[in-house]
Image 1 (tube, rainbow, N blue to C red):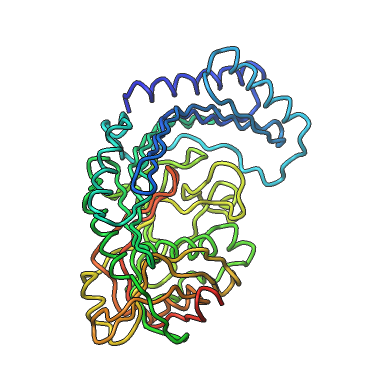
Image 2: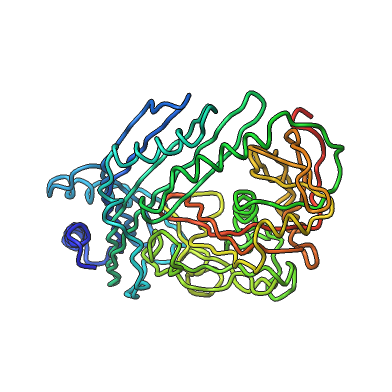
Amino acid sequence: MTAPAAQLASDVAGDVLALVRRRSADAEAEVDVRSGRLGLTRFANSFIHQNVAEDLGSVSLRLALDGRVASARLDGPSEPDRLERLVGQAFEAARVSPVDPEWPGVGGAAPAPNVDHWDEATASASAEDRARRVAEFVTAGGDLETAGALATQSITVAFATTAGQAVTGRTTIAEIDGIARTPTSDGVARQASVALADIDGQEAGERAARKAREAANPTEVEPGRYPVVLEPSCVANLLTFLQNHGFGGRVVEERRSFVRIGEPQLDASITIRQNIGHRLMVGLPFDAEGTPRQTLDVVRDGVPTAVLHDRRSASKAGVASTGNAVEGPNSFGFVAASTVLLPGDRAPSTLIEELERGILVSDFWYTRVLDPRTLVVTGLTRNGVWLVEDGRVVRPLRNLRFTQSYAEALAPGAVLGVGSDLALFPEGHDSAQLVPSLQLASWNFTGGAKG
C-alpha cells in the first residue's frame, strides 16, 4: 500500500522498533500504529441532535524480555520524545512482570492478503454528507417518529515486529441503523458498506416505516415451538454466539465448546467461511498480532472443519494462527473476523411463502448464553415479529422471550431454507459478518417479553 497515511504509520512503527533494539538486541517486540477518523450523526424525534467527529491515532507496543511480557500504548501525536517514553514504559513494565510460560513469541514475515476495503469519499465524509442521508430516512418515514444513527469511519494500520513482519492495511465503513415508530410498534432498517455512497437513506426509511406500520397493534400468541424465518440481524446474533462459544482455539482447548471437528453437527446447507476478500466485506487483511487472515471454511456443508486461533492458542495446539487475534484481553481469546454464512437460492419472500404456520422475526436482543456446551441462549424479539399462516403474514405479535440451543436450531435437518440475500454487520474494523435470512424448523418461544 502506498497511501501517505500507511507510509507514515510504517515509518513510526520502524522508529519504535529501532528504539527497542537500541535498548536491547534480544527483546521481542510488536508495534501497532493506527490512524483514522470516526464521524457519527445521531437523530431522535425525527431531528438530528448530535454530530461528533473524532480523529483516531495510537501507537501500541508489546514487548517480551526473556519471557516477561508487557504492553504500553500512546494515544495522540507520535513525536520522538513521546515514542521514547512509550518504549521506556514498556521496558520498565516488562522487567517487573512475571514470566509468561505460554508466550508464543512475535510473528515473522508473512504477506497479508491483497485486499483494500477502502473508499476515499467515506474516509473524508462530512457531517453534511451524513445529514443528507439522515434527512432521506426521516422524510421516508412520513408521519412516523424516527430515530437512529449514521456512522462513517476510516482506519489505517501499520504493524511490525522484531522478527521481520511488516504489513499495512486500511478500511472504511459506513452504516445506518434507524427505527420508525408508531404508538404501539417499532420498525427497523440497517445498511452497511465500505462506501457511504451505498447507503440509501430513503430505502432504509421506507423499510423501517413499513415494518413499523405492519407491526402496529400487536397480538398475543401461545408460547411453544414454532418454525421461524429469521431476518439477517437475528442470523448475525446466532452466528456470533456460535463462533464465540464454539470455534475459538481457547474454548476448544478448555473443553467449553460444543464443536466436534469432522462430525456433521449442523445442517448440510450451512457453510461458514472466513473470507476477508469477499467483495461486500470490510476490515483489515491481518489481525491484532499482524498475522494474515486466512481464508478458510470453519464449517463446510454442516461439518465443522476448522478452529480459529490467535498465536497463543495456536502455539498450545501445535498449529499456525488463523489470523484471529483481538486487541487486548477478552474472555474468548480470539475474534471471529470477516465471516460469511454462504447464501442459498431462495429469496427472503420465498422463505416466508414456504412457511405453513410459523413466526417471522426481525431482531433478537438482550441475548445471554445459559450453557456454552449446548449453546442454549435466552433472549427477546424486537422491532417487529409476525405470525405467518399458509405463507402469508396474518398479524403482528407482541415481543416474545425464547430459550433455544443455537446449535440445535442449525442441526442436520433443522434448516429448511437459506436466503439468497446477504447483509453486512460490522463490529468495528476488526470483525464483520455477511449473513442471509434463514428458515428454521423449530424455535422455542417460552413466553411474552414480561415473563
